[in-house]
Image 1 (cartoon, rainbow, N blue to C red):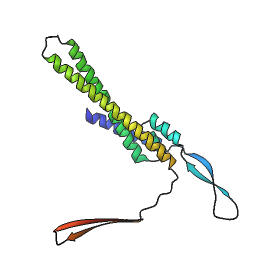
Image 2: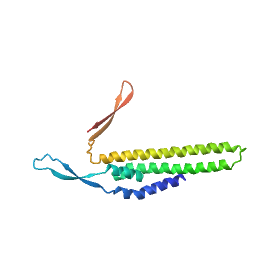
Image 3: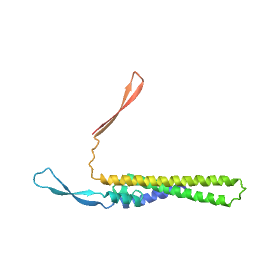
Image 4: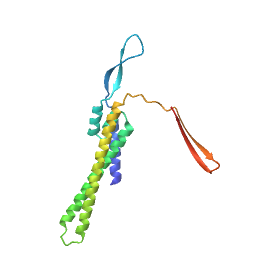
Length: 182
């Protein structure tokens, strides 16, 4: 059952990935001042709508991330939201089964208390999974909104990462030095 759910999620992700990878860009004209004394000129810069990213993130799991061209993040959000939703549905069904068994048992049955405990357990698990869905949706909305604001932000590239091991002969230990050059 779990393998089938995983394969369905993976298949859905593979089928939907090309659709959201080509999200249409909003292109706005932005007036930038060039350091030339001749004149100001218009430069076309692609700009993402933060509200559009937020709405897409709510409408489809990972939609805001795909809109912002963050495919890895979008895939992770899609798998997380879908997985928690499927888990909530499974726990909901189990809860209903144990509630039905609880109601069918006679009052003097020794299994009645056990069925009620199972009902409560699956109810709590369902609620936990639904809260996890809400948390993932909220974080993905926030992430998509911020990514859309920072879409044209130029980032500094890391030029060199160096990791070296330094032996400490007196203490018979090895130290690690990590240096990152920008």
